[in-house]
Amino acid sequence: MRLSFRALLIAACVSSPIFAQNVIDTPKETIEIIGLKRWTIQMIDDSLAKYSPEDKLTGHACAAILRLKLHFADASVSVYTGMTKAQTKPYVAVTVIEPSDSALIHYKPEFKVSLPVRAEWADAFAQFKAANELAQTAIQTPSFYASTLSPKDSTRFEKVRALHDLVAAHHSESDFEIARHTLDMDGNSSNRAMALLVLSSFVERDSAWWVVTDALRDPSSGMVNATASQVLRMMAERSPRAVDWAPVANRLRYVIDGTNLFAFNGLLSVLTSTSVSPSLAPALLANGGTILGAKLRSGDAEAKRATRGFLAQLSGLATTDDSRLSAWLQQTTGVR
Image 1: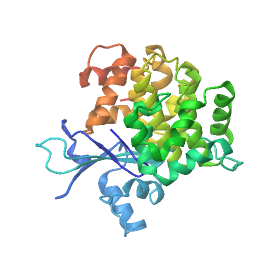
Image 2: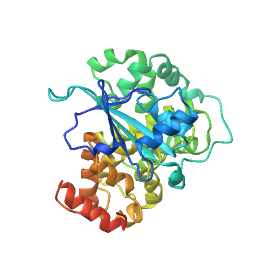
Image 3: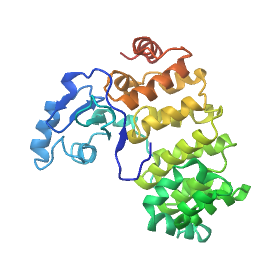
Image 4: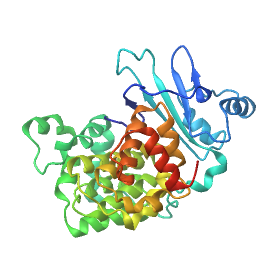
């Protein structure tokens, strides 16, 4: 699956039953609202009619509308379309964290200092910006991270050669520390995005995985959030190995609880492929897991796949049976 910063997730068709009370069925699409607890679709419609009558839940910007106009703590939109003959119209999954659960959302603090684009990263960022569509393809292509590009890739990615140099030639301890410090301290989102690409080279270090994952909670830049998701997925695809996630379990918990819902499915898949330890189940899930349960019950095929894999890994159950995984989740979280 290839994503751009503005693109919605395009994925497989719906294969599971949907709870009708959380679904809007229009001639053009089927929309499911995932994660509702106290609110209903009617309550959302009524609130929009009162506070933002020009906006509709069926609008393509509904995630932003829910956050900005109705003050939902977080929201995301995924679109699934045209993947089988049985699917006649797009299915739209709108996942939400309700306003009363805002304490679950923990983006990183806003930055106090913003530095100019780092000189050694300037060419890479210039190409990243000027040829963004090609850059998006490049950083989501495993072979782009090779130390030397193949003749085919060399031709294909000629316009973002400086971007390849960034991921292929910055392997020193100093490079690692500069990139890590940039993500923690530099308010310039251009530098933070390039820092993530530098860190992609350090797949052998658990600490690189931790830093890239924590960038999913970037406070102010969709570009950085998206790049973190892309880099993390490529790290997992290129170097699937066990990672010790215990030192950052509390930060993982933030995303699992709903911080940056756009990153939710991807993080679960990465944690599964890196053999997250079942011993972390209490730290990651106790008194939580609400979105996991909602995804498992939903018609969001991509989310269900990621959730099933994650829960099977974390539970140690060799199953993808929703009822067994749901029962284990309820037992572990203590939440029904």
